[in-house]
Length: 382
Ligand SMILES: Nc1ncnc2c1ncn2[C@@H]1O[C@H](COP(=O)(O)OP(=O)(O)OP(=O)(O)O)[C@@H](O)[C@H]1O
Picture 1 (cartoon, protein in one colour):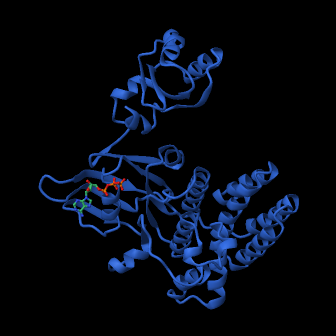
Picture 2 (cartoon, protein in one colour):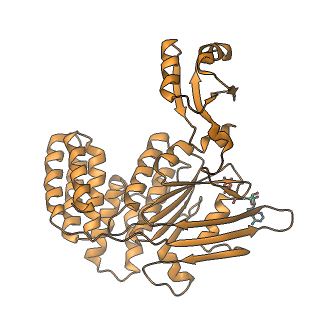
Picture 3 (cartoon, helix red, strand yellow):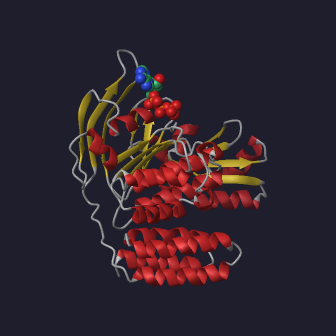
């Protein structure tokens, strides 16, 4: 079974289990990978129908399965993602004597992978992104790009790699016209332009916003527009600085899942590096987490001291002494309270399920708990 066939099979199971909205977003990824304008037009018409009849779930499932059947007939070329798209070696950037210094940092970035760039404020996330985007010169080390589409100068490089900064610029006219403008610069025919733009509008959940102007969109939808504009250019590397900053928690999860899915494209995979303060959400979708502390890249696997513990975050409505007592039997080593949440440290061999069992047995009113032993979150709470 090819990767494309396996993906379609998975999308069918989403529809069978009535995960219709997820299924529909993944269906659009399958459609985009065909690069076939007939398929695009089919899915665009289906999206239009879906938005007009939002309560017809069963009919939507039926029509989606028919669309998937049509998509499955188009062969999709599998793109090889083995060699890295960026090779950075011992990169150092200093803003001057006794000022902030980033690095040395070495990293290989691959297409199809999502890299979460995390760290507290002022630890060098934006600096690193700007170096990778060639907006900022590094002082030492080497940075090599290995794109499929050859580039001759920094302007060419801009379509291979796209950097979306924290603050984006205002635009004029409608959302759709602005997207069409992007492709008109590439000499694409008006019909193809319309089709590609509507497909991207559908994919990024902008269908009902396509005629709106910049000041009529919320910050979250402005970010979606920026992503649509970027993805139309089919970049090989995408650098996003704090894309989640203005989104609510649910919207964050949806956009991250969408980004991961889009970057995992079979015939046009993208390497994605995104900086964020939203650790849980970012870690969940990242293939690798780059954690920066004082400008130094801390590889979480090489930091051994905290690995000697099972570390559990617990948000509950009870006193410290109560937790200490109930966890005594599990040889609790440390209990830290940071004002809102307890962080409990147990011997590394302790099973997380035992911690959950103990909390349940003593009827502790837990609103949230998470095993953060392998999460970069543990650096932030300790
Ligand atoms: N142009 C500059 N000149 C001098 N110092 C700078 C310059 N740009 C950034 N810095 C400093 O470099 C450090 C890292 O900044 P950077 O913006 O890369 O961090 P960050 O991790 O992205 O922070 P945040 O999460 O707040 O966006 C900070 O101490 C900042 O003050």
